[in-house]
Length: 218
Image (cartoon, rainbow, N blue to C red; front, side):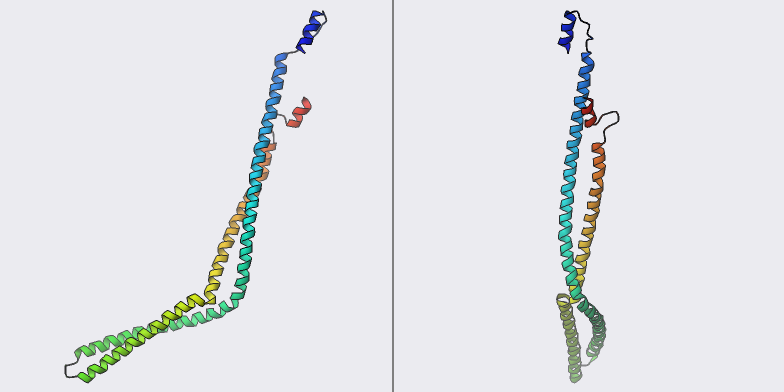
C-alpha cells in the first residue's frame, strides 16, 4: 500500500497516503486479542480436563465403595436375626456375670471372716483349725472356678458371637457410608465448579472482541 501510494505520487496522480501507524496498531491489537483468547481457551481446556479426570476418579472410588457396602449389607442381613437372638442372650449373660461378681464378693467376705476366726483359735483347737482351713480353701476354689468360667465365656463371646460380628460389620458399613458422603460432596463441588470456569474462560473482557468478531472485522 505504501509503495503503491509512492508510485501514484510520482505519476502525479492523487492518492491518500495510508496511516501506517494506525494500521500497524490495529494489526497488533488484533494479534494480541487472538493470542489472549487462545491462552484463555488453553487454560480452560486444562481446567476442564483436570475436572473430568477428578470426576472420573471420584466415580471409580464411589463404585468400589458402593460394591463393598452392598456386600456388607448382604452379610448384615444374614447376621441380623442371629444377632437379635444373641442380643437377648447377651442380656442374660450380663445378669449372670453380675451374679458371679456378687457371689465372689460374698465369698471374699466369708473368707475374711473365716481367717479371723482361724487366727483366734488356740493351739489346742486343731480340728477346728483344719475345718476352717478347708472352708477357706473351698471358698477360694469357688471364686477361681467362677472367674475361669467368666473369662472363658467372655473370650468365646468376643470371638464367636454373631452379635459381635454384626456390630463390627455395621461399624465398617457406617465408615464406608461416611466416605461415600464425602466423595459425593467432593463430586458435586467439582461438578458445580465447571460451569463457573466455562463462564470465566469463554466470556470476553469488557471492551475486547471475541475471536469470531475479530475474524469478521478482518
